[in-house]
Structures are given as structure tokens and as C-alpha cells.
Image 1 (spheres, helix red, strand yellow):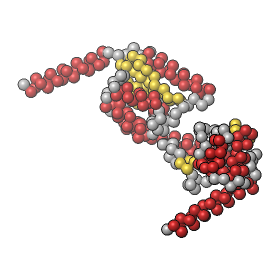
Image 2 (cartoon, one colour; image 1 turned 135 degrees about the vertical axis):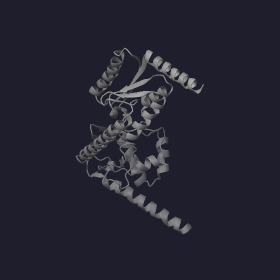
Image 3 (cartoon, rainbow, N blue to C red; image 1 turned 90 degrees about the vertical axis):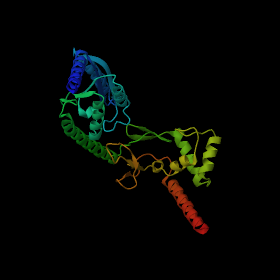
Length: 315
């Protein structure tokens, strides 16, 4: 009786296997490419076309979809919208096989590579890495994937170091990394005075230094005069404070105020001395005099000392 039970289960397994091979596999593809340059944008389109043609040429395959992320880093999957959608649809069994060119296009993070291929394997979806010759449904796939993913991750680290080194060299040459701000337009790594915004900057410094008005009062008066900041609907005292403490307005340039300690997460942090700042004095045309800027600094220092003294008296 028990033998019949086992034989019946074997027959059912054989039937399922034959059935799965008799139908076409639904195949999806994933690609990722930076689109910062025109030729890279063309590469994006060509990759999508390549995968569609590659899948449609296989008689045993049925084209499902190309998931494609543009201009997004491969070291983390958090911001890769199409990648995450692809994982979700795989778990819904909307396709049977995923193809991608190489591990570095799938993920440059070893942990992510292993984690997501395991997740897909749990639902019976294999990943075929064309350039690396790895099919995750094969027995030795995870060992080979770990080795290749580690190599890809190390290459990503080296690339990150090269980019950071290159950026620092360019900063030391005076190239500006950043966007336009009140009073200055940034174009091609250079700062140009925007006279309309510069007048507002001069007004803020004059009100603070010469008229001895607080940042709250200055913010209110600017709104009353119908003057608005660049990237928000209303002035706040913190915005006024940042302008008064920004050395760019007296012609100096300080860069690397933020840095990225982890090339995998790409999370930026404020530089509090962990890395060397790039400082260039008299870098560009000033909007206010150095004397005016230094007067503002002295007022901040005096106000801070008074607050500390007041707090001590209240203890």
C-alpha cells in the first residue's frame, strides 16, 4: 500500500515535469544603464531591443517584459523602481525566468545578489546571467555567483575611489560642484554673479550688520517687501542664517562639506572633520566685502557668548 503511494507521487512529479517542459517559459529581462550622456541614452534603448530580440529568437521562450532602470547606481536596490517591480512580479509568478547581461548590472552588492536570487529561486524563478554563464537554478550557481558578485562589488569600490579622487582634484583646481544659489548662477563648474539675487543678498547683510536686525525680523521684512527665496515659498530665519554664514558671498569657496562614507549605501553625511575640506580663498567675484562678512561673523560670536553667559546665570 505504501509502495503504491510513493509510486503515485513519482508519477505526479513526472507529469508535472513533463507539463512544465511542454509549455513555453515566460521570460523577462532586466537592464540598467546610466543616461547622463546621449550615447548612454542610446545604449539604454539598444539594451532593451537586444533583450527583446534575444528572447523572441528562442522557440521555447515567450517574451514577457523588459524591466529597465535608467541612470541609477547598482550598488543598492532601494531606489531602483523597475528592479523592485521585477522582484514583486516574479513573486506573483508572472514569469518563469529572468535574464540579464551580467552580475554588475543586476547588483554590485554581493549581499543583494545572493539575497534576491534566493528569493526568486524560492518561487521557482531562475536568473540567467548571460555574460557570466550562470543560471541560478543550477546546483553550483550560488558558489559561482558569490565569487563573481564579490569581484563586481570590489570593482564598484575601486570605481567609487577613482571618482572621489578625480572630483577632489577638480575641486582643488577650482571647479565648482553644486547648483546655483541666491546671487550666483553655477554653469560649467564656474560661479557667475546674478545681479537680481545679489541685491537681495546685500540687503540681508545690510539689515543684519548695519541695522542690527535679527534673522526673524529680516525674514518677515523680506516677505512684506514681496521678495521670495529661490526654492521655497517663504523666508525662514534658518535660511537667512545660512546666507549670512556662507563664505561664498565674500568670494571664498569651501567644498566637501558633505561626503559619502559608504559606497554601497550612497548616503551623504555632513563633513565634521572626517575628511579634508577643499578651501580656495578669493575664488570668484564677491557679492559683499570681506569686511562686511567678518562683521557678521563677529555679531554671531557675540550673540553666542551672550546666550552662554545668560544660560549660566539662570542655572
